[in-house]
Image (cartoon, rainbow, N blue to C red):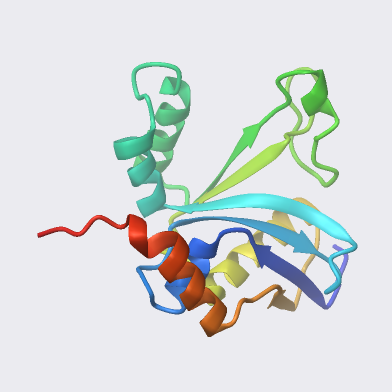
Length: 180
């Protein structure tokens, strides 16, 4: 196993930071990009992280359980009721354009020999995402997909409290329905 000192992780969505700064509850689903350098020149991988709460919300509010999404929903339900703490779901190329978007790191291939274009990590180890839980998941992903045993995970592109508050008040808060 290769050993590097640090992986740098960037969280894609503001919702994560709203939870970190306690403007709302912590997120249960986030996308992260991993780099081997702070300048983000050496890309390592891109992953979606989803907790049990996030999976249950997907089933309840977002998925067509009896239609097009049935297979995916069945996979989620099997994970929820199973004994695994972590499960990976893979999205493989659907057309010739997707083939160029295959991950460059280790990942299982499909029957056509293609690697996934997108990897979801479902976990029972975390209830919601904060910085420490993201770091814990990055260490697991680094070992499982990058063959790296890392010591440190550093978050990059961390918005300030003031930036986050402004984004929350302008981009999120106006769309929250108040429950009476």
